[in-house]
Length: 91
Image (cartoon, rainbow, N blue to C red; front, side, top):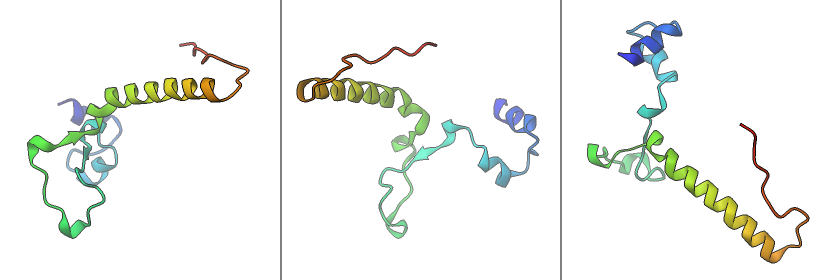
């Protein structure tokens, strides 16, 4: 199992679940459906309704890119800008 090799590589014993939880892979982070609901009112999420943080990365990337483009467009339309384009980052 790849996860067990990961824990072994950083010196965590296979049966040390408390220490493992500090280094859990992102794929294992389940987002709550209603995070602001008081703890006493929460019920377990059905398996089919679980959303993993890693699964949201591509959607969040699109959101951030669109937000940047729309912010620039809004600024161009409402503010006299000296710079009219985003700079491309070198990879």
